[in-house]
Length: 462
Image (tube, rainbow, N blue to C red; front, side):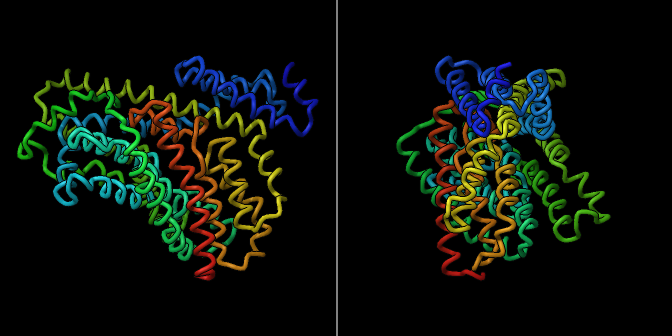
């Protein structure tokens, strides 16, 4: 078989698998312009066929298993997010929130409210769930104001990625804290310290710059048409839901997830209270509760009968199902690269490059991230490599957590499920996603490293 032939290349086999995967995904997506789901499945099979680490007969099953694992994590949240987006737009709730934002910040500063909301919400809540909740607001803001959608997407995306990657208790940074036996409190403080300038540069700085050069139009997405968004702008505020009711889906999801995160941080993984908070704070249930709240408001504000209302929600679920399939396939493509040993190949190649510990950790994490897509895998891999060396640091070990987090945030592209979440939920083309999301995450990686090096020099033992 072909992967047996590749095996003869010895230690270079993972590199061959990586190149085969990259060539396949570029040809299928860019040259042949095939649908994203089909392209990702074929590219994943290609990696498995080439990789000697994956038995030829098990390639389809390995990919399907990885696809299922990804779908188990994002399937229900994405489907419920589709209902939330549809219901919040159709009921006028999203428009009501945007009008509230603009009354405080002004039409020209809506990005500040979206940016700050994403930065704070992504500390206790997974980034993808935050994006599900804020994307409808960004779309409504673009429809109401008539411009700046590029800025809104970059601001929401970059701010959320920064705190999700730098500030515990999100899983990646928390795992690194445990691996290095770092102090949780100081890591949170340093994470915010490093995260603020990183988010400002990559989210607002780059957002303002690219917004002047790239005008992304609104497109139909998440079961909502552009015409429906524009129609909401003509509705008087008095005819829209109240602000509290409009915010309820977002607040409900954030509070439920935050309660479990807080309980885990304060009382430990095995605390009795987590039997309750773990149930209600699970993203599957939290997003379901938020979807019910949004749907009830939609039903109350509409004049639809029950059958027509059900049809509207079904349309949203159809859109969400396509997004979930593409996102899970992107994650499975990354998993096949991981199974091929591409991530460890890059990590091993970079381990002895002779740079300082912080820079070395960043380079390894960034290399693993670009190769296989998952930020969490990049953090896990790099933390394991750097753990024996952490005692040699002459600064707070929390800075090592920051360097790894910055590297693991670097350059999200086709093999990262986050790329497809932003593209599909935001209603972007592949090119627009590369120019906004991929560049922003690349800046996060670079600016995060620079901020880490600067603060580790100024405040080495903070």
